[in-house]
Image (cartoon, rainbow, N blue to C red):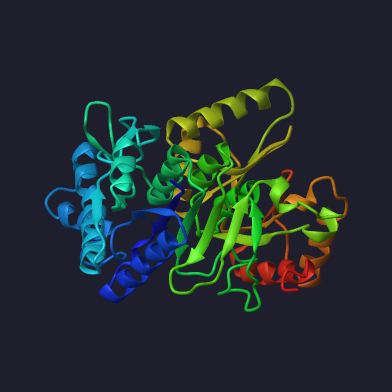
Length: 409
């Protein structure tokens, strides 16, 4: 069997008309010789009757601090409702279909409730029903522990489910259906002439996702990358081919000069950050302060980003809503003269083609200074250059970089 995993988000399943569009995509795949396995999210979004957030808010009216094990049992209900309705849609259209929850689909996780990790997938039940000619619908976002407890997989969990099933079944493709055409060169709400990317590498989409592009969860990409299974990001509401996510070798196959062809893949942004600047004394005293600072922040469960450590200072960012907590933690360490700037944003230029290519940072500085945008902090890796700017400059910076690297061409 040629398995094809098709994952559909909650906005694709809100109405019967949309669900029949989803069914049509699976039926078309079947007619093309594939064995489709659908992975579904909970129907709708926040405030919709069966959305996960709606269920959470309902139970918190009873008690704010429900145990995480019981909360997982509740949160799994949204995908169960969605999956049963989707299987019923196929049956209404005359096709044999069966719904499997995460446990029935063989998804085994650790016991980290609310954010479980998949340990293994036992897909025999899926294969059995597929061989019987049924269209299998699987609940995304959930699995079970070795002891049989229900778990959920955290943010982006349905993407993760689809990727894990793709690997376990040796699928031809893992298709992630969303409400956009695919991977864009920038957020089209900011850049009007943002362009669809036909093909990107696994590394590029992971970086884009980590840096603010919300089309697919990076954990899902990391899973399919392990077995080199192609992923396609498509739109539920059109028949456009979308964006193919695959290995670097496939992306650049037949390309003569990849650096000139694909220097930058896309520009992303993350708003609402606070930059902290901690002065240090040179020498052993500064090293002691560094150790004390980072240990205290770690024990407080504070996630840091954009970290630069120098002999004379430490610089990092946190989300704006964590600013007061960070200040409280720093106060307990006895560190003085702390400086911070709230209302910042991180802008990232992502592209595998920049590796080893001189002049990229020069082009970025040229573009931003031309528009009087101050760079507060920068960092880089092989495929990404990060810039911290003031939040009011974020959209202007995204547009400036998009123009500079001619991403609309």
